[in-house]
Amino acid sequence: MPRSRLTLLLLLTLTGCSSMSWSARKDYKYDKPALAVITLENRSNAPLNWKLGESVAELLSNSLYRTGQFRVLEREHLDAVMKEQQLQSTGITRAERKAPINRLKNARYLVKGSITEFANVNQSGLDLGVGSLRIGGGGMHAVVSIALKVTEVESGEILFSQVVTGKTYIGETAAATNYKNVTFGGTHFFQTPLGEALREALDEGVSSISEVLGQKLWQPTIASVDGRTIMISGGKDRKMKIGSRWHVRKGGEMVRDPETGDLLGRSAGDVVGTLLVLEVADRYSVASILDGNAFERGQKLELISGK
Image (tube, rainbow, N blue to C red; front, side):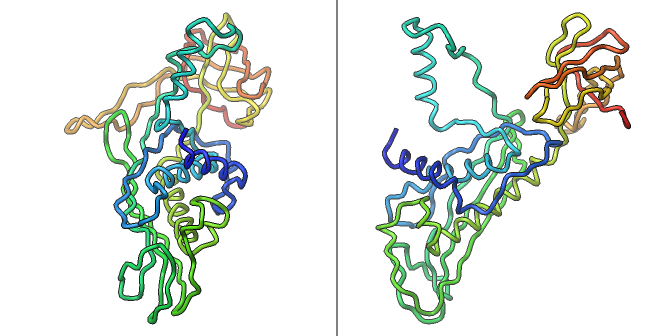
């Protein structure tokens, strides 16, 4: 792993990315879609060797993960994961806890984009670079702009496109700040004008992505069927309750736009039976069948009101 990336990850771990103001959402009722953040293209004129595209993508991934709304997948640095899986499959390591192959999760959405501005500018908009802050009349701002896009993997459709911007006013005069001595992504960095501007831009981006992707209500599904015992996805982590009763619906038809072929959703299928939750584990629940018999893995559950 490159030293620069290792340093950034260590700083994120040690500081908990405490400079980011976005806090984890506690709600359990929403779905957690899987997404991956791709290295951003750096189109800014920042002269420092910060590897902005990779480093800002790391910070964005961390911020999205901290919301608790998404399953954030590694896509940019899979070499180490794949090499370890290959090593374990050779038979020279212990059989216990060997990672099975072909089990990497699929990303539903890709987050990508470009850094279009990363600089100190004066009131007229003149780019003054990021090597240091200079004394200058007319006021000065640190500005960070990122053009973000979210693409749905299945269709390739762009679901979200927005330029997020952070701007911090520095003043008409400012003491020199030598960014060459500042480690990107560290605690001290987020105390600088550019660090504050980046934090503001990332917060805006995370908030917007959350509004677009993070508002789908979660539904438990049947994980397995063993006689009259049903295993259900979701347990204590989803506030499932012993004694709750659920209708089970078979999958409805896919509804597509007749002109474009775009997927519009799925119609509600027929109710095939009713389940009673008997046991709640950390991430799954166990239910018995009250009525019905056409139960299959992947069927959705609906809570019976008042039960």
